[in-house]
Amino acid sequence: MSTITVGLAAIASGAIVAQAPWAAILIARLGSGWRRPSLLEPQPSHPENLAKVSVVVPTLNEAQRLQPCLEGLMRQGYEVREILIVDSHSQDGTAEMVQAAQHRDPRLRLEFDPPLPRGWVGRPWALHTGFCRAHPESEWILGIDADTQPQPGLVASLLETAQREQLDLISLSPRFILKTGGEWWLQPALLLTLIYRFGAARAVETQPERILANGQCLLIRRSRLEAMGGYQVAAASFCDDVTLVRAAAAAGARVAFRDGSKVIKVRMYEGMAETWREWGRSLDLKDATPAAQVWGDVYFLWAVQGLPLPLLILGLMALALTTPTLPLEMATLLNGLLVLIRWGMTLAIAPVYDWQTGQGRWLFWLSPLADPLAALRITLSSWQRPKQWRGRTYSADTQPLV
Image (cartoon, rainbow, N blue to C red; front, side, top):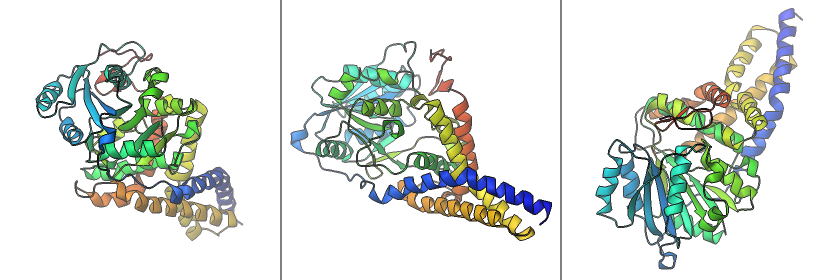
């Protein structure tokens, strides 16, 4: 047996040791997907739920994206008592847009948040302001992001699910609207980093440290939020949604994360570069996660998502050019299995995208080729705390500079 063959066998053995345990964890996480709760369906409004929900929408220079959100919220039914747009003194006409819409729906109310205090990130501060100014008789607070497009029956569906299942908090994954080929190629790979790390949603989440949430649409029982002191627990977090939900779960709240692709859409970022820059820097969830878990997840992503396709190609080349060995064959088979799982997940997540819009939609099917970039993005963001977010610049202690 040649020195090259022996060396390749040793490398292959190392790859098996480094990857196989994580591959088993991935299979276990994804294997429970068949038991995940069904997606939320739009529900009609019921008079007995009259005015139970106050909606809070934080905004900062959202004039280009806010109109579909306002239109969607104004189509919601009896459940919505008020829609508070909490604006952080936008300079692009956001406030004027809201004021114009107020003439069409008296539930709309424009509020301006006070100057951002030391130790707060802008989004949780705006949400906290809206919570403090919401009508005291509202039983639920619904946080909605300005880039979302609520569909008819959204709030009724959320409230019906929360009440029927006795939940304290429920958040939804949306249907994604992508418009450029670069987005269709990169965004699914970034989305899979979340699914790989946290697996399929459960009926009720029971492990606070592994709970995933989406603040783009998050309904929380008012009494639970009051007991937590509002959004203060997530004041300094750049992933305030996950921080808030994990704190609530740790305090005994019943929380759930569901597929809301039939009741809410979102157009998050404009183009591939903005998707890489803006979404990528919060996906590590380090503000809600112990450092050991963050870096364990980084290793996990490289092992099961970032490296399998390159290693499969190298393994096939080695098998073709050298004498096959059992370790090399096993390593190639393992990475082939991981690549097969990834292509299966491509099919699985296809329904959460809006296939009626955008150019270059065919690049979605090549998104596994972007997996090494996705793993790299999570690695880079895990190293450094964001300094800029939604038009604000922050110092190391989360003090706003601009």
